[in-house]
Each structure stands twice: as C-alpha cells, then as structure tokens.
Image (cartoon, rainbow, N blue to C red; front, side):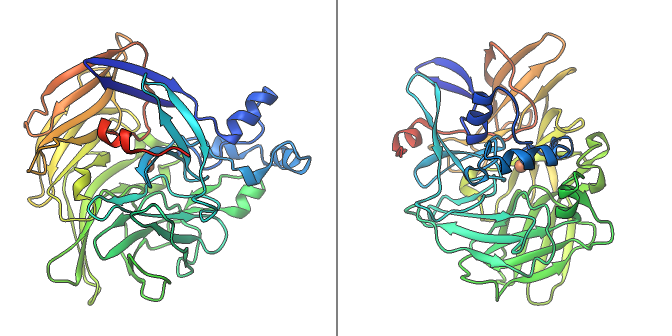
Length: 424
Ligand SMILES: [Fe+2]
C-alpha cells in the first residue's frame, strides 16, 4: 500500500491506496491469497515461502500466470524516465499517478517498451546531472546479477550480465559513482533448492567472504569488473559512493550489518554501523572507517550529490529496526555526528527523506521529512525538520488521520517534477 501526503496551497491531503498489481487484482477477484509474498517484503520471506507446493498447483492449473509478475510494488518509489514508479525487486516497476486532488492511481506494470524483463531493484540510482538512471536485477539462476541503465531520454540500454557473481547473493541495493557501479556480494544468499522444498529462500553463509565488485558504469559487458574481498562487510543498503581525485580510489558509504545471520528473523539482534570504505582499484588496498557507533540504516542524502563526493548523510536510528527512534546527521568527511533529533519516548518514525531548498547552494540547505507515530497516544504526524540546524528542528508538522506503517522507503516529489511526468 502506498501512502501519500500531498501538500499544496496550504492544505495537506493523506491518501492510502493499494498498488493494483497483477497479484493484488487476481487475489482480490479470487477472494483469497494465490501466491506467497516471496522476495517482496524483507521481513516476510520465511513465512511466505512455506506454501510452495500449493502455489505450484495454482500455477499449473492456470489460476495464476507467473509471466504477469508476483511483486507487490511495496518496497520503494522512484521518479525516472518521466514516470513515477512503485518498486519491489521481485517484479517490474508499476507506474503510479498522483492526481490533482491527492489520490493515487495505478497506471500499470511498465516494461520500457519490452526492454525490461523479469525484475528490477527497488533502489535504482539517478544521476541528477546527466538525467541517467542505473539499476540491476538479481535472481536465483545465472546470471545471478544483471546490470543495466536508462539514458536521459528514459530508454533502457542492453543488459550487462555479470557471471563473475558466482553464487546467488541477496543484492538489495548498490551505488554509483561518475565512473563506476559498485555492487556488494554479501554472506546473505538465496537458496533456490531450499525454496523448492519449502525452506527459507534467503539464508546466510558464514564461510563466504563478502566482496565488493566495481564495474565501469558505461560497461557493455563485465570484462572490466574487479572484485575485492572485504571480510565482515555485509551491506543491505548503500548510501553513496564517489571517485576520489587520484583517479584510482572509490569511496563507498554504507551501513554494515553486523550479525547478518539475524537479518531475516531476529531484527532486534541486528546492528548496522555506517562505514566509509576506500578501495584503491589499482592496488586492491582497502581502508575502512566506522562513522558512528549507533545502529543506523535507511540513510539518505541530498539527491543532487548521488554518485558525487558528498558531506552529509541523514540516517534513521534503529531501536531496533524497523522501529526508528530518531534521525542523525553525519558529516562523512570529518567522520562525526553533527545533528540529531530523537522523536521522544514511544514515538517512532519512518525513513527520512532530504528535500533540497530549490534556491539552496550548500549541500545541507533543505529539509528532512518523515512520518512519526506516537504509540502511546495512537497519533501520527508528518514532520518537516530543518536539515541545517544541529537539533534538526521541527519547523512544520501535519497531524495525520491514521498511521503509516514502519519499515518502508519513500520519496519526495516536488510539484514542478510532478507536472513534467508523462503518463502511458
Ligand atoms: Fe531497501
């Protein structure tokens, strides 16, 4: 379900609507679940995989057509190729339209004129300067990773299969620089055989050494990819990456998930520590610097700095995830916390999102927005924080008529960007 707060002419409108996916429509018609939620929700993987044989029967008897996708489009949102998409990494993007009165409509599953097949990450990376979008898909059968990009006209270019990813890894996110795409091959992998027998589709392998793969971002094949072992570096999300001035070093900022084996079942035992990792592509020498001891994830930055050297990261404080008790601002160049707001006892927020001041020059000139739910009072708010102030001062808020669930990603879209959208 998507939740949108539309703020226009001094009025705020909250709308909550299901994305009308093939799965939603088919099951809504049938009146009961036909296909489990495999891959579509990070925390629902294990419970949803157990009904494999029942599902197989429904596919064989034609109740459910797999070629129409199994996704929920419930993980994230992105605006690229002049369209607004709801994304889930197990399926193609679903195009969404926000109407003038704040309603949410599903336009439909979008395959970029037949060029995008199977699925796409829920975390594409957009280079605001060039207008290009970079993305990938991963899966349980070779190639386990496929990279692709969309040019500034929204045209998808050819797939780049990455066969040097030798095992199916859980690859939820990645990073780009101006020169490279940066992938993480972590200890969390997919178990295709387990899935068939009804076991968990994702599991951890402590014997595997995590790797970072660096591929030229305009590569037409994987011949120039380089892989670097980074023991103990298991990332689910990447925050940003950039090329250093020496021309041979890539810096990656990402939350390293400690005790990755608990990610699927025991989230309260998971602690993610944001690290700055520098990789010398020529020598293979890697240096690592933790940027905060806090449990942080769902981090964002000023979107204009995606793929470029950036100074500020705004990260959600897990208490534990997906409950977010506050947000911190980290100066990643100095390696220190420079701002913090706690939401208060019993209050938990969603992912923060950075909204740049349209006339702003400095990187942190803008606002942080998020949803906050007060569990004691049962009240929810949409809050706007001043990203420049050390207290991340709340400068505006809207009381919501109902809550927005914890744990998903979001997107802020300006009115001017909304007007530019084309609809299929
Ligand atoms: Fe994510």
